[in-house]
Image (cartoon, rainbow, N blue to C red; front, side, top):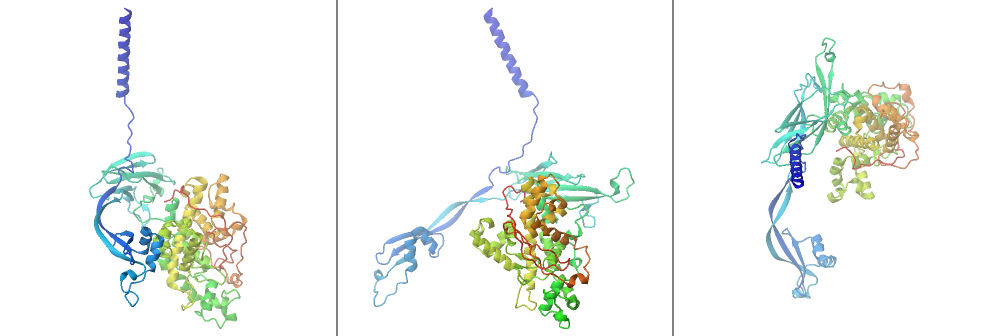
Length: 613
């Protein structure tokens, strides 16, 4: 009886365990869709490549013995580096010093010739396998269903964001596009995905997206920040629609296909103001909209000194003691001053369209820095319309890798340039800085006006790229202090002001002020940050304010311009930094004097943590 009871009990336990396992297996489980790994199968193909091995012998004239064997893949003689590789330094030296063997009265047979001779011993056809990396799938972003009212970013109805994937491999195709919109997943079969957009609020919505391929892998994961803002009284449900419906739509993404907004806005991931950038940060559609007729007394003085304006009828030849024109000289020079300050407008607009740096901003900076005289002012080692110094060239070379990649091989070898600017030897960095400075300088003593105008126009492109480099540096400074992108914490206009401060006063000034602002839990606004600038950095405030307000300020009265003081050199104590820019007490809105570069602060260098591509 006891045995039977035990058997029944064991049987019951087995039945219970089986039922429990069935319940676990059959009970509904949450289903998750996992994307294909972006690395997936390696996108490589192995090709058989034919080549020829040439075996060369170096032999002694005296003994006819082979002293070295050299292998090349070209028909021509081995060069000295190949001889060194296979034979060593001693044999290379003997080969280099060997002269041709000529018979004469003293040499009647080859054994009497000194040195070595070269002999092609074997030619061997061969095949090797070469691994070639294939291009990955990619996804691009655009808008569809937007009629772009008045050529702006306004749409008369809510548009769709179009994600369009491209598979470069001929025998493969895109299976689907997938991603998340504000954390909510979506998928679309095929290579096109149209996502309906809705109003997002001022901070926008984040879209993460990728494409999955029949190859078995997925593209890189991309992001886009999208902002959709309704505009007009039609959005008010309690009032009759007084306005035509419209929506401001902005997209920030490295994959954006259409005409982009400011490149720096992409670097910072910062949206422009809904109704457009302020006047000083705009790029007009026509160069005529950049025309100015400001009175530049230093420019007038330079034109008089170069003989382009005859001011001999004026007191002191139309000049003040500091080289600026006096009132009489300015009156005589006015027509040429007006022509001169506008001759660069077309090139400024072209560069603005190419780089995304606002055209009006560049013109305002040139006005403040050089009064459009791109020569070298006496005693100043700064050149070009933007008055770039050799030290200021560091920002372009360090923070604009694409420019460095293009420029460096013009000065140094490709192999050396592959190390990157920050890893070059100090003398190589100095050589690049000097070469870039020479490219910017338009001073030309042999030219009729003393200026090489072709070089001056070329320097505008370099200057724009220096501003892009400063945008990158500002983004990194904010990221280093907060761990967040610049556009998440600061407004577009304030970020440009930070960039000008960085360009003028140096990255150390801005870094210290940003750290203190963040440490005191204050918002990263221009007003908050500048209150933490050290005394040596505070001249940069007036510099930024002048450039930002230049488009709306009136020309100063003639009386203010009669006495143009010499530039005041700002003394500082911190350690030097290559990216710092000159600062000085401004003399007036339209009569800035070129100023020596002030003492600098420790440079902020790129880090691997940078969120910016």
